[in-house]
Every structure is written in C-alpha cells, then in structure tokens.
Image (cartoon, rainbow, N blue to C red):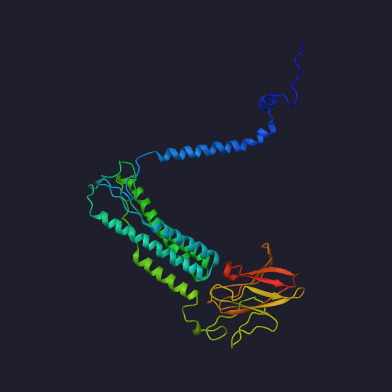
Length: 370
C-alpha cells in the first residue's frame, strides 16, 4: 500500500522545497545571477593579487627614501622635467595652429624656449662626460677592394632644411614661399653636384683601379646665415613691420594699383572709401577685422574689401555654405589695395565667408542673412 503524499503542513515539506532548488533549478534566475558571480570572482582575484604584491620583496623599514647607488663606471643622468616642458610647448604650438593670431606666436616661442632648456641640460650632461676615460678610436684601413664607400655628406641635412623651408613657405605664402623655393633649389643643386663628382670618381676607378672619395663638404655657414637674414627680412616685410606702416598708405605714393579684374577695385588718393550700403571688411596681419556680418535676405549685397597687408600678399572673401560648399568666388585683392565684391541674393540662414588663399581661423567669419 503506497504511503500518502506529504501535505503542506508536513514537517518534511521545507526539506523538499530546499531539495527542489538543486534538483529542478530555475535556470533563468541562475543566468541572471551569472554576471554578479563573475564580478565577485574578479574582486576576489584583485584582492589576492594586491595581497601578493604587498608581500613581495623587502619592506621599507624607515620613512626616509633610499637613494639607489649607480655602479662604478656607469653614467646615470638624474631626473629631468625637460620632456614634460617640451610636451607642454608642443601642445601650445598645436593649439596656436588651431586658434591662430597671437596664440600661434605664443606656442612657437614656448616650444622654442622649452627645447632650449632641454638642449642646455643635454649640453651640461655631455660636459660632465667629456672628462671621462674613452676607448681609443678604431681607424679602419678602408673598404675592401671593389667596394665603394662614399664619405660623409652634409647634403641630406641641407635638403631637410630646404624641405622644411618650403613647407613653411606654403603656409605663409607670398615672398617667403618664393625665397623658400630658391633655398630648396640651392640645396638640391649642391646635392646633385656632389653626386656627379662622386660618380666621376667611380668611373675613374674603372680605369685606374683605385677609388677615391670626393673631398668632404663643410657646412656652408655663411650661405645659411645669408638665407636666414633674407628669410627674416622677407617675413618682416610680409607682416607689414618693414618698412614701417606709415611709409606708404593705400592709394598714396608707392602703393600698388588695384587688383586686376576685381570688380570695382580701386584705391582713392585719400584712402579707400566704402560705397554706400556695402559691408566693410579689412584684412591686416593675416586676419579679418570682423568675424560677423549681417545682410537682408533676398537682396544682392556688396562687400568692400580692403587688404592692408604688404604688396604681394593677396586675400579674398569667398562665400561658402555651412557644409563647406563654395557658393560664390571672388578674385584676389593684392596687398595695399581694395576691391568691391558683388554677391547675389541669399536665403535666410548662416553662411561662412573665408579667405580661400589663407583658410585659417583668423580669416574666417559668419554671415547672417535675415
């Protein structure tokens, strides 16, 4: 005869309920607890790892820091804050490239100053090592027969300087770019001359059986000094510092004529005069004097543009949509002249006016059409 099933009030019912959890578990609830279980295991692993590191190695028995002793014959320079300072200088330079204007010059000065600090520390460390005992120099007899080993050359370094000057000229433009091209051509022509002379030495070796290197080229210090002075003078002239600004005014004696082909471009003897109802913009020092303009919607409008930068530094005012699409282009206006730019009617909204020759933040503004 089978035993009766346990009732709800039976004393073994709690035991059966506990056993049911393990015999027929609720898998959905267990899976929901799985991330918590992993988190607990990770926390336990972290505590065990920290405990292991805390127990490794000798412990400090005194509050004073024990300075390490460098073995004899090994130079170990001390800590230096120069790399951190140079990192701040480089960051300031990149920020200046974005903001433009005085921020760019501040970044350049700060980077140069931090690099000089680092260079000074390196010189001091080198002077400290100068008196150390050195091994005798190993003098090689020369390359094996039939192997040509050219001597050291200064031309790659000069070529790198020429390339850097060209990149800087592409950014600044004007006469700085022209001088940079001349400097790069000078470095490349010198490199070509050295290569030609070396090739002729190799051809002579086929006849004589003896290979000689061309004479070592020294750094052309005088030539580099001349180019450095020229770059400084051209940059000061292009920035409007040399000659002084008051020596020649727009439209006065010595001022260059208006931009050819620019609509309405002119410079009056007493200075540029904006037509009635036009929007005036002045460019000076590679910057617009205003970054906000307003005009009425559905009506053509005029911008009277005055370029107060030195002659040979062209600017313009190009109109673009917010997505960067070019809406209306204008011909460049040379430095020291003015132009009257005509624009067609626009729909209400915000537009961007920018110098297409120098698209930097300082020469970018917002035109609001209402």
